[in-house]
Image (cartoon, rainbow, N blue to C red; front, side, top):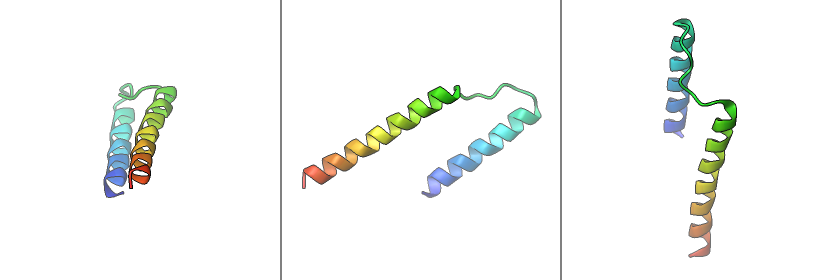
Length: 55
């Protein structure tokens, strides 16, 4: 959980700096972020299912 919070804070800081410098944000469009979140969630679910069903 600590890594997730640190990544979120670091991303927020970078976003603020990029907006302050009036640079384009180095991030995919929101649809891409939703896709990446789905990919991550699918990976976690698979790990959980493998752990649950192989015991």
